[in-house]
Image (cartoon, rainbow, N blue to C red; front, side, top):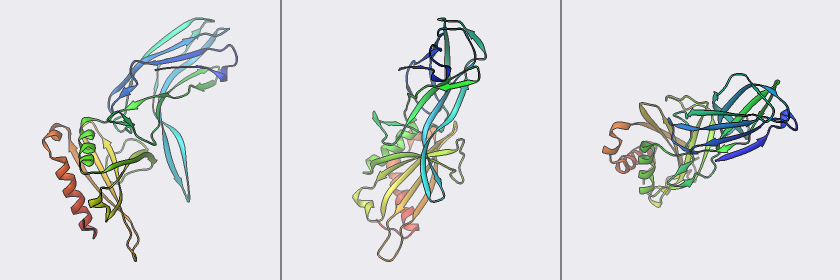
Length: 262
């Protein structure tokens, strides 16, 4: 994928940048590879640095208000300073590490509604910094994440939407200042007690942490509330487990502990 943008902060006749990804598809803990092609403008300039950063759309709660903002969460400086002559071309190859807890954006070839993910290129000349538009990146689930998603689909849960929320999840290893929630509608057999199921993945190099949140329905004289649970998935043995049965048991036991019965 290619994007091209004249660097507005550097004025008319300044350098232009093309960033080319070898493949915009990746997984958490993997890599994005490509090249940044910089072409000099009408006059020579001293470039301070070239950097790339991975960005996503994050939901932020502030008091009673809620808003969304683009947040860069991983950054790599590709160069130091160099002289870019008029009309000269400077190519910068890169291999960009994707953080383990990067939110996923695709499931089985379908984009997760509500997700935005992209790579931005930044160049500084004479203290003027300009960032490119986002170059879209598709983040696919790890095999262990796929097993959990497959199990939920087999149980009849249907995708609703996904978002990224700023904040921390208690009691787990979390490396980024936000976490992803993937929301599902429940099948009829669970719908009597659950409005929706919210799923959060927090992978590490050693294990996959899975957090489930049950949005409990309120009764005529009771208010609905959320119930949480979590478990770890071992990468080495993930294919040896009946995740459909495990999740069904967990959902029923978790619900029963909180007074829900399916």
